[in-house]
Image (cartoon, rainbow, N blue to C red; front, side, top):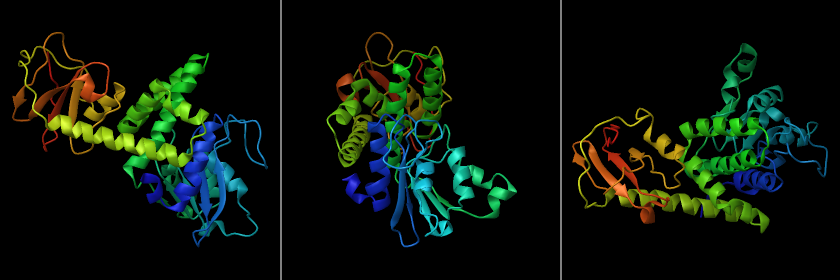
Length: 323
């Protein structure tokens, strides 16, 4: 199981805090600080939509970020921050990156990229920021990154759906567009979680962080395996008609197109695909030197209507399937 394979800073603190933040209605981000011996000495979570806390922390405003609360919880009189490592589920934003530098924390590790607000690159932006080097390590596990992004996507879509202003919807659209470029699997899973309401149901019944992580990891693994199996199978149907047009956006990465379509069952990195809703009439397969066009029916693809998917070879050529 994914949960049991994670090291303590992720398993025992960061993901626990991220799930606690989600359950409290804030952004699902958790952070921890370990000393030079690897012992956890501070922890924090996003609290931007919370009104109460058991101790002195940032909460109830847009500065109440997980990394900021972990830094505030640190006993500055007893530790050397330069010997510490800050762990966070999500790439630090400009606010938190600046605070990490001002501390200054010696090392940063984050489990998922944030294509919307992630700003860890600011550590090299100016002479001052570069003056004290900070060791940075990004995501080490694609499955964990996808799960964390899925939590963000589900939260963002739910927030946009509940909001009365257009600003939340615009923010959600911007973030989903940005995340799709980096972690399309996570975006697809997040859309599915929002549509099904499963994550909110787990929250209501008091599911643990371990249960949520392992269930989502199983969904990701099953989706990847299904895509590989369906892509390899033979399809017997009448051939597609002659090409008469060009698929809009065909220059985009294929995995992004699938994520934008909201499909939960996305391919893994060993196969590039091109997908679109099928034309009216029979569905079929067209073979060529670059690969195969395969119809995936709803029962196998996991979506509401058939999609035609083109799986390309090692050359990674992406050719649209025209009607």
